[in-house]
Length: 88
Image 1 (cartoon, rainbow, N blue to C red):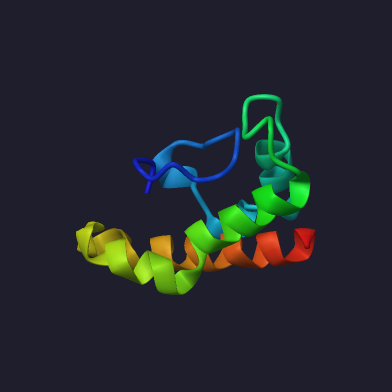
Image 2 (cartoon, helix red, strand yellow):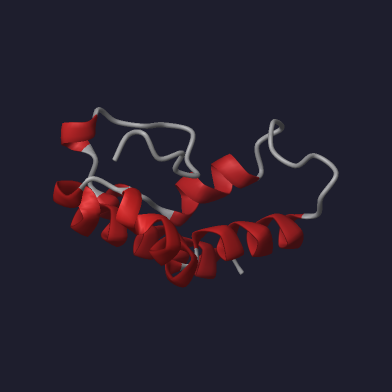
């Protein structure tokens, strides 16, 4: 879970990571930080992030996730996609 580069600036230790803790504000803080895609408008940043974190896209790399983490990772991917939809 912690080896995945989640689109948030803060990260808790693995045993404390709860996908429901990801908020639209966390994602916004990451996407609109001065270190992320400086030359791209906000709408493009959100769209590109959504394409990257779409659950169908994640299903391609999900088999490489440790079996015991897959449910939690799937929940986190779904939560990130939901948060990105809230930013549109």
